[in-house]
Length: 184
Image 1 (cartoon, rainbow, N blue to C red):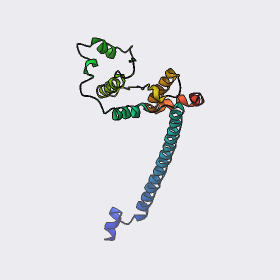
Image 2: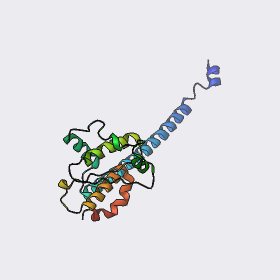
Image 3: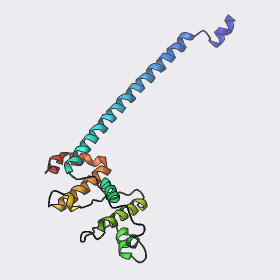
Image 4: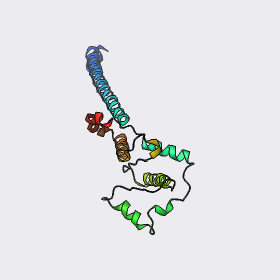
């Protein structure tokens, strides 16, 4: 039996123990590195969120996505098929052309109060979100009764900045140096 144990080295437990301890030390070091990196990333994310929230708050406008939900709730939702006439169809080539032209990036709807512009836009936004295949879509509702200023164009621009920054947190880095201007 002693000859057999020497042949297959069953009694070399010290070497096996050293290898296990080395592997354990290596694993502990890697776990520690991973935890440190994860902690750094979490801190960076918190800072980014803090900066992003400061930027969004400094703009002084509501989140357009929540505005749309509120509008739909307050007005009783969309009426089925009432806005079908504007969507791309053979009869509506001008909208279809606008939608397909990369140089035409803005759709501006104007008109007198109470004519259905807001609900039309809510319907179009919903349709574009469903059909745009994850392309960014930015919008803002200019509701005069909500603004405390007469500078509606600045409010609209602030709203669009809000929508863009809230979609892409990396843009926060670009707006951070201008936070003091956003408060003006």
